[in-house]
Amino acid sequence: AQKVTQAQTEISVVEKEDVTLDCVYETRDTTYYLFWYKQPPSGELVFLIRRNSFDEQNEISGRYSWNFQKSTSSFNFTITASQVVDSAVYFCALRRNNAGNMLTFGGGTRLMVKP
Amino acid sequence: NAGVTQTPKFQVLKTGQSMTLQCAQDMNHEYMSWYRQDPGMGLRLIHYSVGAGITDQGEVPNGYNVSRSTTEDFPLRLLSAAPSQTSVYFCASSPTGGPPYEQYFGPGTRLTVT
Image 1: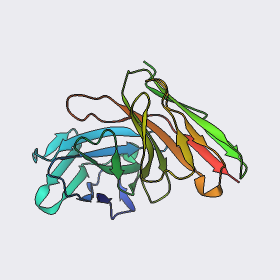
Image 2 (image 1 turned 120 degrees about the vertical axis):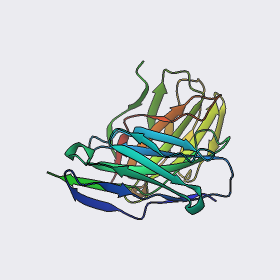
Image 3 (image 1 turned 135 degrees about the horizontal axis):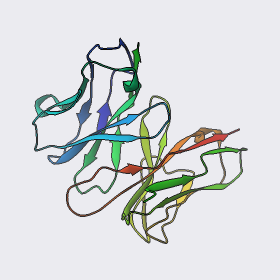
Image 4 (image 1 turned 30 degrees about the vertical axis):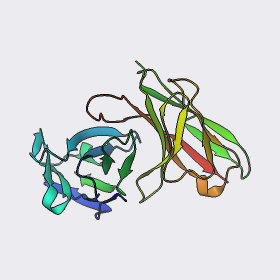
């Protein structure tokens, strides 16, 4: 069975602080894919990143960076110099190989960035 | 391209009523799925389809029916609504072939069952 755990249900920071959102996953598969989605207050789901299990390189996109560590089954997401517009719920998700579009989501982390 | 569209955006039902949530995509994606979002539980898969005429159950299928007669449409039917089905429903689609692509989500339908 697959499982994704986002232990932080809510995080509150002040603008310009750095913040890391944790994601820990469980799977018996050797090939799998990890995703992060953002859900702003407007409610839509916005794709942020996809990572496959064979690519452990960290990725940086502007103020966003992701740290994938297979040894600890973690795929953490860091926002540097947070902004009020980063306030949202962030979801980590796991997809098995050859599993169509079946995603297993974590419970989400609500990030509040205060001015 | 409109992407993934869902109607209605909001719906209030009484216990026992039936209704269909509509989902359509214009990207010629073969994979389509329905998720429900409940507080603290993320999104959970209800039903999915890998192509026209093919559907299967996800994690929480009870109380819901689906069919896929065309590539574009994937409606979700609630046969007899219950308060436990109060949730936000998202439809998603993704292409097949090549790398696993991200899913494209619709804007969601907020359903309240009283």
